[in-house]
Length: 140
Image (cartoon, rainbow, N blue to C red):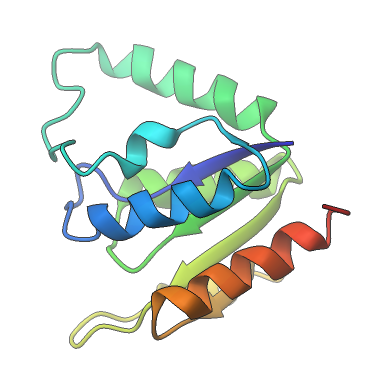
């Protein structure tokens, strides 16, 4: 199984350590095509030396290749929103994990989409349980 993990890069890296822990957990089940998103040394300026078209096309190839998408959506990101929309368009299974933060609300476009499984969680253990449940639905 191959998973596309989405998390904010240019939108902010305050959840980078969480992404790393989630990627490591997902790797118990599957290959994570986008494991670099979980690299805590990655900065918001990552990829600025790459042509934006290269990043777009590479990421869409990974998205097409993936069996499912898991996105951590607590830090708003235009790119993550775009990836989720493409995954829905491609009829991929999508899990969005959201940790409520003061002053930030989950987008209604994510929360209201019937093709996205959204889980609100309050700690890493809850997020891991949501991943376990989501991936076990695929027979893993």
